[in-house]
Structures are given as structure tokens and as C-alpha cells.
Amino acid sequence: MEKFGDTYTASIGLQKFIVTKNPDFINHILREKQKNYMRSHITAKRGAQFFGKGLLFSNGEYWLKQRRLIQPAFHRSKIKNLFGNIQQTTNDYLVNFPIGENIDVYPIMHDLSFRVLIKSLFEIELSKEVMVELHQVFEELSNFLMKDVNMPIRKFLYPFTGEERKHLKKGQRLREIILNIINERKSSTGEFHDILDMLIHSKYEDTGESMTEEQLIDEVQILILAGHETTGNTLSWLLHNLAFNPAKQQKLIDAIDNSTINEVMQNDYLKACINESMRLFSTSWTSERVAMVDDTFENYSYPKGTVIVPFFFGVHRDEDLWEDALTFKPERFIEDEKLAKSKKFFPFGAGPRMCIGNSFALAEISYFLFSFFKSYTIEKTASVPELMPLLTLRPSEVILKVKKR
Image 1 (cartoon, rainbow, N blue to C red):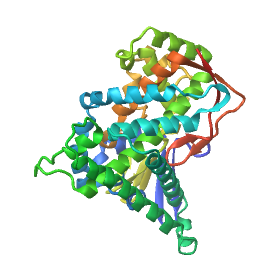
Image 2: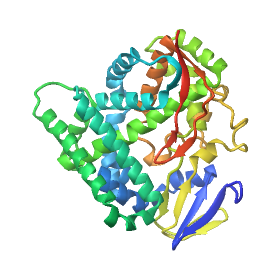
Image 3: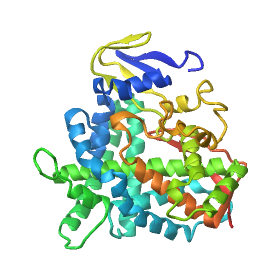
């Protein structure tokens, strides 16, 4: 983009791409003309092979039907029923949080976010072995999928390496684990207040029927895939930003100390820190849509089948759009209250396909910050994380000094 500008075209073989960090162009495809665009078959079809045909990897009428069915389960009022689980899991985890001069908080944040999500999905205690296997398989499959989509030439080697066959087998094992949990739930006579319970009891408006077993597995897999990776990354980048900005960290601690756990979701400075960190390190750093019809935007005219790539990371760091764009300044979201809902800020995407679990993620992040900084402080080290733009934007590591307060 430094070479070609905020929007440029490219081709790979016969496939045409338009990459853009122009917020108006991005809003054109994600909001204004969203009915004319869908997820590309490259991503949707391949993703569905490993993680099922859930919300993330479906299109058209099926996606709309599933979105309408599942959306009410993630309404803010419903998510409130999960706050107790989020708080308890977080507090239990923080009791043994490691203290020291060189603590890599990245794997810790991923483990915590995975535990919070699993506990909120399934209000039961899974064995340590099942938790480890679930976490490991999701990690391996998501890494394989990203490499597969980004380097399609790899598929010609699969018949010789057996890599695809091995990962498809892991995907099947994943479905078996989740099916066992669902069957155990359906046979139970107890009362549950978790996401699985909401999904099981969701009914299609037109038929009054529930999801099939296969659909339930698909949607649970997508929620785990999309829910723990993004939140784990966001928490890691947040701690990095706060460690490298001690004055901002102290301001956040002061704000937390003057709040109760019930007020934390409305704490202005805490919300500003979260928004500013998601601006600088958008864990959903990019996306893609394919044009279903010929379309135009300003000086661009492109045919059906063109893939448009919104580069959220670039939008959020554009000096023409953000004052001191590369500086961690949470105050900007307090000075301008409309900024968090502006059309140049895409922390959870935009339009009808915006992340369905955004309220859940914000609750988890807020409760973690509140509980963590009640007990600990952090300082930077000489280590600076490298950006790893995979399925999500990961840090290579986040090495910090962790101290008890």
C-alpha cells in the first residue's frame, strides 16, 4: 500500500483481487451493498471441510437462516447469564498466575480464553485430557487451514505427504468429542444456563424445528474456533500495550480501583483501552468478499467474481484517518464518544456478518482486566512481539515482567 496507495488491484492466475484500506470502499461491500457479496468459495468451502458449515464458512440463504436462529442466543441480555461463569473461571485462573521477570503471557491468555469459552459453552467440567486435546486440535487445524488457503500450491503435495488426510482425520475426531458432549447434555435431566443449552433450544421461525445434530456440531466448532483465538490475541496485545505505556496502565488501575465488578462493563477508561488496543492490533486483521454481480465504487469498475480484501489493520493505522495513528492513546475514544461506532473502526468487522460474539468477548476482556489489575501489575521487557498475520493477528510472544500489587 505504501507503493500503490490505499486501494490496488492484483491477480493470481485468472483470479482478480482488489485490496483496500479505504473505509468507504470497505463499508460499500460490508454494509451498503452487502447483499451483492459473499465469502469466497476458497475460504468457505475449505474451512467447512475441517470445521463444518457453521456461520463462519456458510453463505447465502443457509447463512441467513442460521444467523437468525443463533443471533438471539448472543443478545446482550442472554450473555448476562454467562457473566458468573466468566468471572469465576477468570478468578480461579488468576490465583496461580505466574510472577517473574520474563513471563510469556501469550500462551497463558490463549489458555485462559479457551477455558472461559469452553466453560460458557458447556456448563460441565471436561476432563483435563479432553481440554488438552480440544485445544491442540483446534490450534493445529486453524494453522493448517491458513497455510492451505494462503499457499494453494501445497495441495499438489498432499497425495505424497498425507498432510491433508491427517488433518481431516483430526477434524473428524473433533466432531466426535463435541457429539459426545451434546449427547451427554441431551440425556441429562439437569438445568443448564450455557451457550449449548441456548443452541439446543433455538427454533427456526418457519418450521419451529431445532437444529440437527450435525448443525449443532458445526456451530459449536465455529464458536470455539472464532471465540478463543481472537480473544486470546486481543488480551495478549492489550497487556503488551499497557506494559509499554505505564502511565496508561496506572490510569486504568485507578479507574478499576474506583469501580465495582458490576460497573466494569461501563467503565469509560477500560472500554477506551480495549478499543484502542483493538485499533492498533486488529486480531481480525483482514477479511475477504467475492462480488456476486458486476459492481463499481468511485473510479473502480470490476466484474462478478472479483475478490475484495478489506485490510482492517491498514485502516486502523492510517495517519490520514487517525491522529498519532501509531500511538496508544485510549483517551481518543473518550474525547470523541462517536469514534467507537464510526465507519473507520472495524474491531469486529461490519455489517450483517459482524462477529456474533462481540458482546461475549467484550465481557470476557473487561472482567479479565478488572480482576488482573486488582492483583498484578506488568512492566515491559526488551522483547518486542513480532506480528504473525495468520487466520488472526497473533503476536510471536509477549514477554513481560509480572508483579504482585
